[in-house]
Amino acid sequence: MNEKLWRVGTTYIPVTNVDQSADWYVEKLGAELGFIDKDKAIVNLADQSIFLVKAAENQSLNFIDSYGNERFSLTFEVNGLEALKKFHYDFVQKGIKAGEIEDRGHAGRNFVFEDIDGNMFDVWSELSIAFKEKHFKKA
View 1 (cartoon, helix red, strand yellow):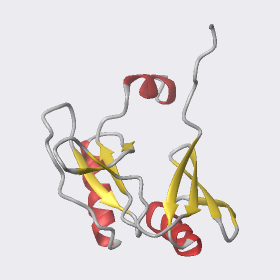
View 2: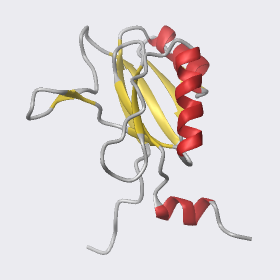
View 3: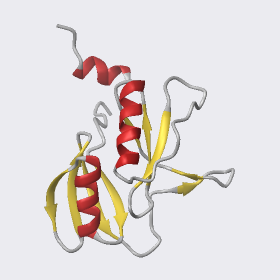
């Protein structure tokens, strides 16, 4: 097979209230609302379509790892440590539940935040090399 998967185009996130969640993603994260009905909202964030889908109670993207820790399933990247610190500060000021900035023993730093349904997301201070080469070409 010569074809390949090119990118992740859509992520589906379970939510309890579509309207409230759409408002939260737009107001808190700066997402752009593309569509909304009673069952789902489509927001554009980080060059991706995110479907906020009405789900049963107590559903989330999170999972439990082999050590019993609840984990996130999606990491957003920002351009450097100063950007990470600014996002962290802004999130805390906006009332977003955000953990401390962590050193996990690899390049960069991270922090975890949650949406209003408890879906956990990671933010990492390092952009991938391929992304930088594509989007930050030297003049």
